[in-house]
Length: 573
Image 1 (cartoon, rainbow, N blue to C red):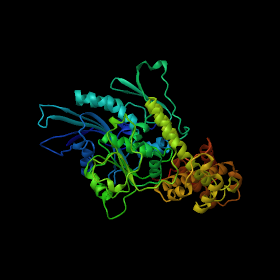
Image 2: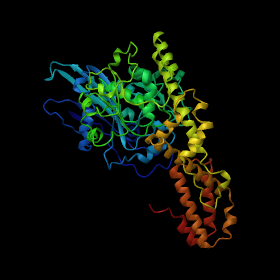
Image 3: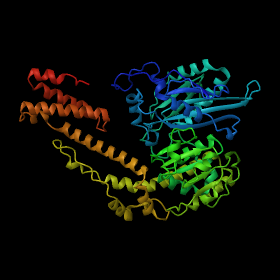
């Protein structure tokens, strides 16, 4: 393979942004959407030759991930995505600048600190003039953003043009992208690209789960050619169609962070299925590693396929028959047939025994010895089957399935939310002159007791061993990630309430009783609190931070001039 890369290798940006839209240097806007664009081609003489300035290991793995396995036989155009670990020690210079977009993004759309996504448009067509008899090339967008639907739509516009017209067209696309507004959640964005205009909205964490705010077309939109209803959602019904009878069991396996492998005929099907699995527990974030398309050349191949320890908490999408051997010790295997033949309803009612999975020719289905905690919900199966018989549009089937998963996840998570909220100290225990009070620790048995009266039975009619499901969940990476996030939010809320309480105090009156040393100490503490509050973007009432700043100024003015000079100096970095 050989590979070329777009110019937007990271450029230094000085210091964190002080204002909402910081001063943007050339390529900053581009870099807020994309890390780079790669072109990967297959060269018979060269084999793996890569022309890109990233670490070598990464280059080879990007090359392999950008091409379907030879046995996939993908003729024509194929789109899929992959995800890979960021090389250790590389810090994105735009980190601080992008963080303030992340704050308002829903938890499942926040950028992954240690990972990149690769969005691929691969073309393979017969070409007699080439030695192999085929033209094979991939255009790959590398980004930190998990906006699958958006990047696939973008590639549909750029890639065919590029394959026809080559380099100048890529340069034009990069220049267009560098003029885009930054990817700000909640705003309606219009993005011109190669003569057409895309219009979309990135969701925010304040949107009600399960609602998508549709971008309406306005009269001024004569130029808009593409309105995207979603930037990140995959078609759940199409993806789960082949393993349709087992959706509820799959939801449990994903929720509990079990080791799952999806064996599919092509990278498009493996990546769609893995993304559908990860998103079926939304609005919970899936906190373990997942690889929509995983190959034997991946740097984590050895680590993930070793038999010396239990399989890790990860979801892998694979297409190479070799994995049927290397991963046959995995506890849960989903075998997907060709989705193109998904017209007839999946026939696999029973979960299959793992020992029957010897080769990739095994019948499609779910191979596992797992016993679900919850009783099967027959209603959703009937409702979707009826939809297939009545030729209900795919979008409607997808909406039904998405709502089903959302309600199931919410029934499960609401009792946890309710219990965790009770760990917050009472507001009256917050005193401006004492450190903010601590959160009570999470006590598993205490939580289990709350389930008797306020468990999932309040919102779900599903019966089964909910208690067992919770016990298992509390040991999973998904609980760990969720609880850490909630804890951080609550600590920040306490800090914010503490700051607000400080602002209400008459500090001038207080310092009259202080010695000079105590007053200087107070100024330094308040300054530190202010800096920390700005850095953490604490959820304080509007106007709190300017008021605190004014308090600090007024206290400094009561001190002798030499001290005023020292305290007014900005802190040295």
